[in-house]
Length: 455
View (spheres, rainbow, N blue to C red):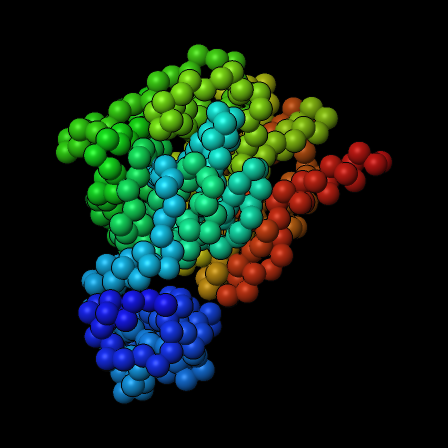
């Protein structure tokens, strides 16, 4: 039971007949013994949803950010600015963080790959760890919990750390700009951190690149006094910008080792070099010669060969990520032509669409434009936005339905070509108007190869 004195002091709860045994932020998961934090957006639709949900929810005490006529008696209003501090006090009682080394990775691109490499390298050095990020909660090359976000809510994160951290030596977390601004990592102290890249993304949320950069810089508020943040050796501009105001930043060293095919692209070499630094500096160890044992995380440079061709699936969904992988492919397979299939997500930064079209046009011999996750937008309009950046219209094949576009691209493969399916990576759905329709680029590739090999 949560100490009643604490409840009275921090939440102004006069008395509780039932024991408090948990804390939640989703009304559907709360029960009669829980404290429920429910944030109301200040518009009529959200207030009506609040009214409906609260009538059908159970909780010992409700904390909300706005007063409301339908607010029940067993509730109180707390300023949003106080939520992280108060939630932490309660979470410290119920879900204390085990004695772990915490490592953070941030960046426009590269977070998931680097986090997974840190996890693998740490385990190859004899340390037990787990990761929390885009691929869910992972350990031993598999996802043990998929929560559907890059960074979970503050409450869920603390629960994950408590549940999966017992008996572990370390946890590596992806720190998205959203999570940093929204204080979803509040109160945690990181022993080491990596910042992989910085380029245009999320301007639908941050509005300007300056705001986006400031959001990323918040990671320094979470580093302990001995921590260093590492950036890739080649990221000169990023390093200089950070160095203007922070001293605890360093460049990762270049690795002069023979690397597996997954690291044939320079950006994945950058990710590996930062991962090396994070593991070696965190545990004060020298990583053994184990590179041949490393495997790419789900949907990151997933590569299969077909006759004289290669088919690659990658999560690249920003201009920088698309350019990096296209450039990496051209360097790794200089004798092959490149075909690129991609789309852009709906209800997200529209300004990046023509930029991605321009990049695809610069590197590829043929472009298949299709759907990614259109969400509430018209996929035809999204494709039109992308096409505005492509002067070479003769290169374009436009097919809205992604499964059909992928099959068309397979059927048109000629000798010595690389086909890049970009944007979906590990995802196994296409999100349209709130509904996830089952679909996977990786599954499509595997089915195609199985069919061809059985001919």
